[in-house]
Length: 302
Ligand code: NAP
Image (tube, rainbow, N blue to C red; front, side):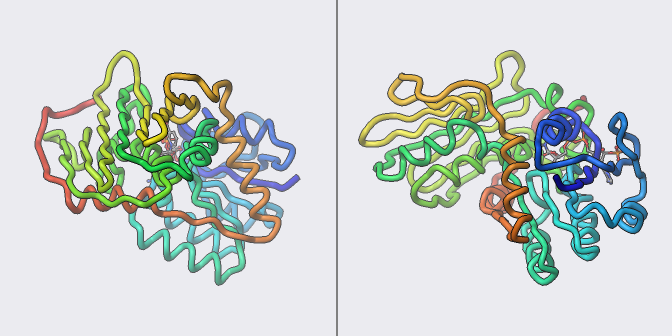
């Protein structure tokens, strides 16, 4: 068992990281760092530098902070010789993630840019099924209620928070994993609330007849679906990748273990101090923000 420290005890740390670590035989949660949060029975620090200095027994740091503050923590952890696991999206900019990768390589420690949706149950079988198919079209529908999934989190609408691409990057992480050929963006419409700096909705068109609709204003049923049409049939991923359906027939279903799978992967990586750094989903976000036509829509408040 390895000692691990969780940094940023917010929604995702509590909902997913803490239970995944508790259920794992690879990890022991021995410290947290947060300005306000804590985990029952676990020593809580509010100062990251102090934790690094006082806890040489902790070799692995898992960062659950939003993307903007995450870089400084990751850089400090790597400089202190610790292995680092990053929540998605791995940074506020592409270059800062590349900088962290270079630092980790130089320091001989693991850097793991996690993409939890890639661990959803249907994703690996979808990738395998599509590998030898001719893709004729694909469509992403990612519509959820920001008030439900990011309650009161103003950082998602601040610069670097990426707006609807925060959950949208989950879809992009699946798209970039399962499509046998890469695609690149041709057109984007981005919908910015009048009082915010990041989009609340986006319509994207890529090469290869691939399109995506992302919307954070969805009330009622939530949609996390990807459909891929091929000359040999239609594959659909539902529920964020958990369910795979081919030509209407259910192929995979059942309980997902996205976060436990991320911690299994981190345990493998740290054995050899190997890194896994993939910024491809973020490239599509950056392209959308570069190429996208900006539309102003109704102001949004939580
Ligand atoms: P959150 O609830 O707002 O929690 C973020 C944590 O980081 C809190 O502990 C928070 O404050 C700390 N923090 C925030 N801003 C900080 C700053 N400037 N400096 C230092 N610490 C700061 O956010 P979340 O929903 O957990 O999301 C965190 C990451 O997980 C994001 O990258 C998100 O994309 C990803 N994620 C979220 C979900 C979801 O459903 N919400 C799902 C999957 C992945 P304190 O230090 O005050 O405690």
